[in-house]
Length: 53
Image 1 (cartoon, rainbow, N blue to C red):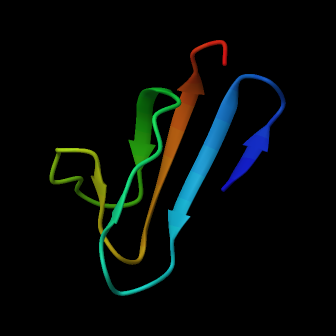
Image 2: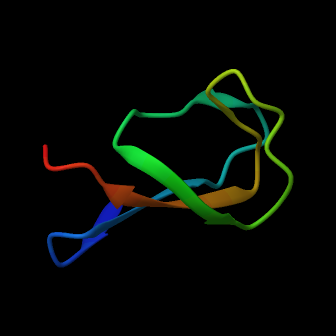
């Protein structure tokens, strides 16, 4: 995970197994289809608009 200023966070799963997404705010574009349920598939990235935490 890494941030871009105070407004954006990127979570990347570079492994093969799905992982639970952290809760940061509104999900923006992802690098692949997200199955829902707070899961980030392997080899996928997702951006968040930070909700003030």
